[in-house]
Length: 154
Image 1: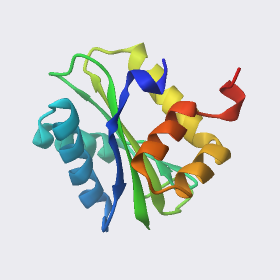
Image 2: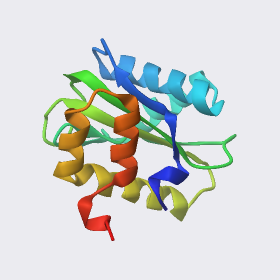
Image 3: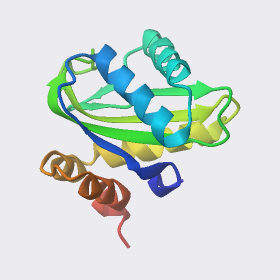
């Protein structure tokens, strides 16, 4: 599974003035509502429910919130680069500034895990994260995400 299959260019944003995880989740829910037609209240509740099971901050300033939804027919994602890092209860206790949220159909099974692994592999790459942090154009952020880790290049 490739990021191009789950992320569209309009679902990449710069998050200005986000001051908490709660506000970030509200912004994510609104973004996926606008870009994918997902009900924002449903998306927000699903993110919060999943986060209650365990924080999705994976370390080094990266978070991968994700949720399964009943009325979704494919896996979709959005990316937000925060202009100011927020506390996310991450495993390394570092604040988060790079956030890739995934939403999958309730019955997506292994495809959800494959999508999560693809996103995780991309954002584990320090080169990708450096490029993301050094750019402020959403079109460039989108290109960097789709380009992925250097080790994937042929």
